[in-house]
Length: 236
Image (cartoon, rainbow, N blue to C red; front, side):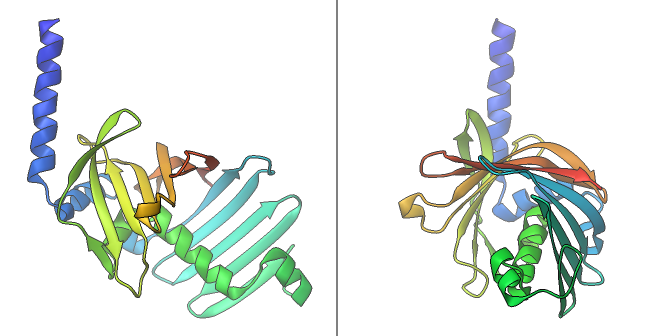
């Protein structure tokens, strides 16, 4: 019994020392070293699958290609026998509906198939699957203070991130395991005083292009813990 108490006490001291001694930038560097130890993100070029499970909706399967060196992004979404394709190469944009590039204006509206959405999806997938490395991008404001916070009965090292006005207005919090620096939760607020926004629980890992990415992401509302859906990453 005394041995167990001693181990818990020593672990607590170690955890306290880590959180008090780290700056925000140092915590981010440690997290990047865990997820992308060989600095592969700048040359990322891979295709992966994302399966989205949402309450009361059919399963959605997405094939995602991100080629950062050649500025290529493509997304193929399959749901309920409909296939949508968004393809971006530099400033060029192509759209396909069920494999065809000839799409009526009515169909574009019905399926929200347009180049603005293609760019939004590119930013969405590149940001979320590029974390925590994407927190080094210009316009990212890292809070120098590292906080300790308990979430779902576990203590984390927490990094607060804001963005310059031209990038975005949300506040983000990233929760890292205090021993490995693995990213296990992230959370964002549009207006923190209203407790709006969402939190995302990360579990498991999939190694893509030698980068450790979360295998499963479960999305919830901050305000009432309402469940939104889960997406599952896999290799093509």
